[in-house]
Length: 319
Image 1: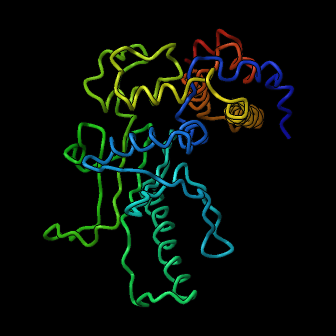
Image 2: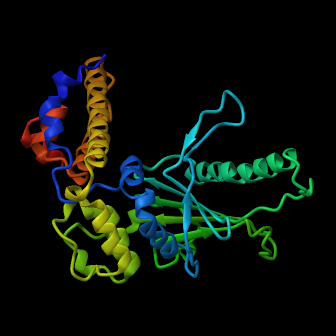
């Protein structure tokens, strides 16, 4: 088993985690720990209303994020955010993903089945408790599945995108575009399409780009750009400020970041072992991507060098 104390210098690593001003938001674990909390209800609503134009949300209830499988062999799923509008019972499922993966759209489709079958289960429970509910009532409240991804999805045409970043999907007839149901909505925000660097905040053209920029680079900023003055962005910067976190919040955040670095350490160990066995072909590119990801996440070059057993010069070359 990989000895993280030997390869990563855990004591030094813990002291360097989250050394910036704002939290890193592109790990799903940090996003749901820092942003998706009842204390940030207003911020969550502002994000939902930004990504669903025309939607006005009064108040939301945060729902248990863990959902069990239909059968024993199916693993449990824990969402980044699952909430419900108090007045309309519309549900919003939000996921953040920073690594590209196969069949991502199918993954989000499968996630949508959890709140749908939960609605039907609630009706069944009410019938069993004696409430007069039509046993043939399969009507569903709308479910919005929102994916914020730091990569680019494939499309048949760029016309699928709104404002260059957002694609939306519903269930429609393939011949005349007739809508099958109002209950299923999918929104994909492709943050990976932003070509700006962390020091180019002044090139953001609109509110959406300012939000994407903040999601991607907030951990590299020392203060909120003056032009980022909308209520949403003010609330986002306030919520992610490390110095304003409670002790418990900060401990949870540091633990997540430490675990991510541990994961990179384990990947590095596996890489070195593979190289020793003559199986390291093509690993150099993967190592470079790991180093770049850690730098983007706010880890210092010296910390990464210690964790991966590299010299500062090698880190600079890989970056």
